[in-house]
Image (tube, rainbow, N blue to C red):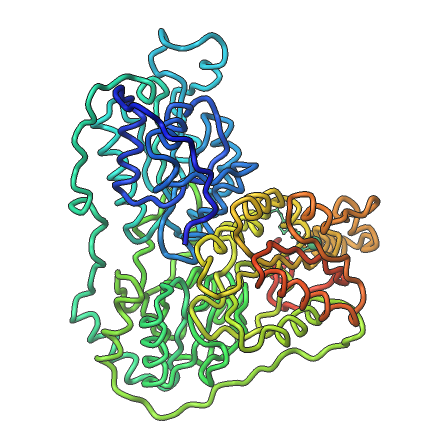
Length: 582
Ligand SMILES: Cc1ncc(C[n+]2csc(CCOP(=O)(O)OP(=O)(O)O)c2C)c(N)n1
Ligand SMILES: [Mg+2]
């Protein structure tokens, strides 16, 4: 369903065509549905073409108040829909603003077409001062280390090819953002007739690669002969068929399944074989029982194995299913440690699982550990009581959680469908929460599934202006802020350091607390046309406030609830709980 569109007045004659008209036509041919953007003169040519040549549809512009929000919205959209959309970033400064969010999308292996612009590459054509500010000798270098490919085409035919290639590469697993930088002079050049558009169907991303049958057989033998197999269900697709195939494989093997809170829902967490609450840092002790481990593109297989076996050699056979090494580069180490692999299937998990399902022998029933919603006191508003109230109100409803706060314990809520949870921000860049939520709302508008992002106050405050894009384009969504009035994750780090150094722990809040003045988060929502509820301070008001909020969202509103939670994490595997660095 399309978002509320700003329709331009009709343009009478299109006799004269410009370079950016051809680029816009190519974006339509490539079926890019939206362009999230914040405007800038470096791409005024393209901006005009989207509005006056295409009539602001296919792609439709989505105005954003900050480039970081624009990219986060495209990120959330791709997570929920599996489809890429575009972003347009003004030269230099716009790209700089958007760069953290591009890094998040890169780490999350999400496809995205990032368009940029530069002042005229031909210095003789630059306007004084500003076109020089808009020009860098290698703008793509700003994001080259966390994009899959970048290019600055010098002609319309070259721009056609650059866009075809950028979309093809972004959509080839492992997926990720690509960047095409459009010269202002090329955009603003008269071109006469539109050069014929290529047939885009001949330039699509390749079909997924299948693994060698001998390797599938070898993996199946290991799994069939295992005493205690385990599956690490990591980065997998959103399809229901793939979800069912993973369940069938786990059941046939009677394998324990682990999921990760960093990545989207991969397995029903209330299934008897689901072994532990999804966590940022999984409990290594649990995995130590396993003799054969099937890693389905798990984000940090090496780190997870290390949590179980420490510095000793890994005591289980490892089957690694991942194409991720194709994207590994030298700058960012988001590739994590190098895991051992006894069988390495270099394909996507959604391809390997049905093949393994056919090839393995059924194993006798196993017992999996059980876990329950954590016990605790219900007299204070905490993330736990918030989760409890939210669950009670949304039981039986289709909800897509687009973000969870750092203090969330994976046992707080079950995921039973691939769209129940979209995972975190990928790169740990705080401020993504609102944009990811708005992007998911764009993707799921009209599907009947309510998009809800539960996030920290720090995350909300850094990305809050994404809300305006949601209200402006009528993208219903719920944001619940687990507001501890602090960058609390880092209070825990200061506490740890203070303890280690024998210094006063009481000082941990300094440079961390967001207080005096207390910020009215609901007012920040109301200021942007959303419904703002709260602050909610009492347990007795929690459920009625959330109920009211859900009612508003069901009626098409964007709604924010400021829930004042007591500082404290109930997530044993949170960042600060990892062993102190030495
Ligand atoms: C852009 C960015 N700046 C700083 C950090 C470091 N950081 C990690 S978690 C965190 C606190 C986030 O605060 P909030 O969203 O309120 O969550 P809380 O820890 O309070 O639960 C910070 C500042 C980061 N990850 N990203
Ligand atoms: Mg906080």
